[in-house]
Length: 227
Length: 227
Image 1 (tube, rainbow over the protein chains, first blue to last red):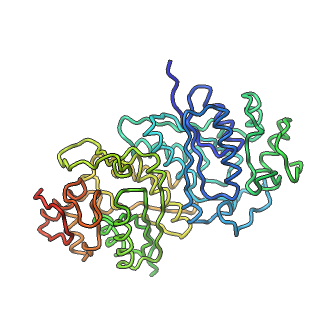
Image 2 (image 1 turned 180 degrees about the horizontal axis):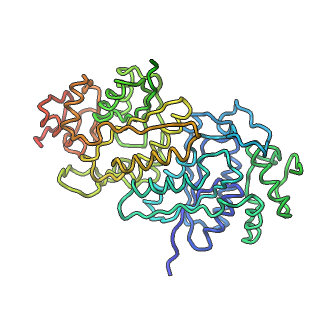
Image 3 (image 1 turned 135 degrees about the vertical axis):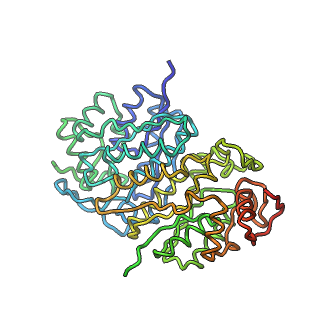
């Protein structure tokens, strides 16, 4: 039976690596990476390329969307704003929020999917651990899927799959371990590119996930707090 | 009373100029132009800038989204595909279709709107004359508006206004004449940049609109068929 073609949105981080592993169980994968001007782009792209090789992506696309940096409004894309130290208890929208970022990524992915004939978009969004980001919730993906149906050719059928959206980071690490995800190829830190800082929101979530899963994180960290 | 701030998506063509004039009746306008690698971008950008000056835009943003050219699939962005001669009777999706183009533009506009505090996105889409483009129909804009509600901050309220979506080109020309739109500053041709070709889909629709409205189109054309 022919395998379906899926596009995986892959930053190069832990979540997108596990999502790619899940997609590969049933689909051939094409992998899409967005350079939206984030401070750690060089390192993320390296991880993306290594993961694409590892998962034998049939096609890759790296898209420069520097207009998101131009528009600003986020510490991820603005070197003048300092990435804040993690506060995992806060329910506020973190200042690393790029407004409506995932919609921009999904729009590109949908355009590409129509051209290459992909019928699935795999997104490694996590609702719980990204509670501040409105565009990481399934209700948003459902709404966007409706927009895809309304805005593409009648014969186009594209589903947005968010296989880890209800998982916590611990469950994601365990799922990754089960699927033999090469954790050493991934990158999560928002702040550094050689060794991970260990203290930004993204490092904190990752480290806590590995710690609670009882799995060793193979990355090197400048600081390795117990969360 | 404070005027609302609107973002107008403006190609520099007739439809977006009339849409800008309508937006200006009630709102201050910020104007957004997308360079998605179309063959006539230089000329369109010139028209955009002249219209932004004419309508005293409080802010402008020109965004390079060349990934849409990278993705391809359209004669607008691919010099190797020839723009076909207009066939106004055809119901097929024209080969100038960039898959899901308007969703890409709306995603950028929404990100910008959240940063500058705009509450309206004005889009000069026309359902009837663009019947082949799935993302020019109001059903798509309604779906995308829902995606905006689901994917932005709780306090964000952004409406997509499509004031000419049910008009034919003739009604658009008449509306533009009523609002004193500077037609001479606009550009519609898909194919040429000095004189309009007069025979591509976009020129044909425009010329027919002016002819049926009994209004003189001030642009120069290489050919000026009666449609």
